[in-house]
Amino acid sequence: MPTAAVTVTAAGDHSNSLIGLLFITLTLLTLGYGVGCWLWPFAACTRCKGSGKRRSPFGRAFGDCRRCDGTGKSLRIGRRIINSLRELHDKGTR
Image (cartoon, rainbow, N blue to C red):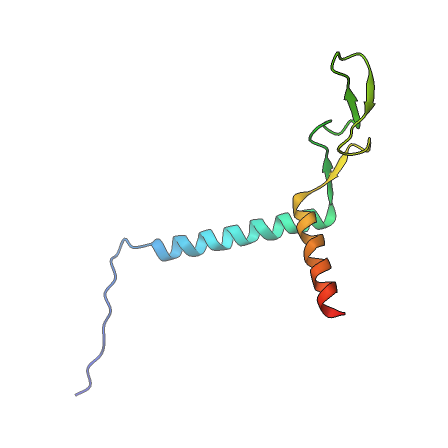
């Protein structure tokens, strides 16, 4: 007579499903950020807050922001990563 193998799991053990849900959530967030960096590669400069101007120490004179060269925009971190990966890929395929 054949015997059947039976496995027993606890009824309240949902750790595998929570880990799977966390993995899917992090994957979707990462892909969403990557698409955002692809479509909108620039963000407001953190030093001048997007104005492109900097104040003198006494607050009376203005000049161009040194970090963004007066544009008010800086390349996002995610876009820097995408550019580095693309450059690495281009070097490897030549």
